[in-house]
Length: 237
Image 1 (tube, rainbow, N blue to C red):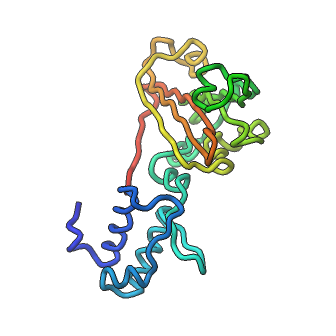
Image 2: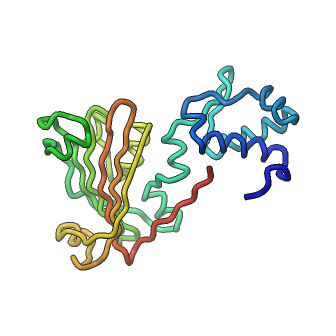
Image 3: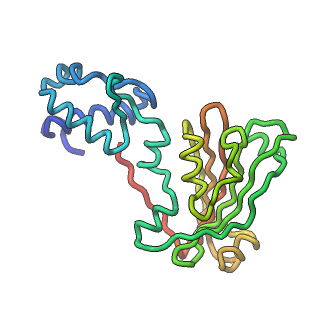
């Protein structure tokens, strides 16, 4: 990492803001010091501070509203930049065509394990979707997802031929918290069949849980054939 003392002035302002975000000093929705305060803190011009804040807006880390100042962006905007990738966008960035095969879209009763994850009564209902995502017709991801109706009441009405569940939930149930696990595992027979692979094929399995406000919004099990997919990311904070 470059010595902050030798960075251009606007980069020093940006580095300071990013450090406060990465350390959790400022949380989504918190106000960022005013341009005048940053000018005084760093001994730089207003133009320099303005440039730093504009670039942070472009990077999706803060938002600016006339009359309201600058605030830390909500988590769903930050996470879209840092970690959460919509598989449609990943495929499109490679210059290929994304398509989806919908296998199930239904209402189910939560079993005890799901009820515990979603913090619901065992008699509660959940939305359930199962689909296979393809790249130029080749299956690359099996998605098995449960969704809390309280967080996304119209989930079953979404057109998943034109929008992925990830994108839909980012739009309708903005993230306030998320966690995930990643491990190597073998697919079940239905998963292997849907992905067009042998049950003995090693896969990358991600289990991802998202929270939106007061609700646990979604629990997704994402399975990637090991020979067809590599997990990539870039963290900028």
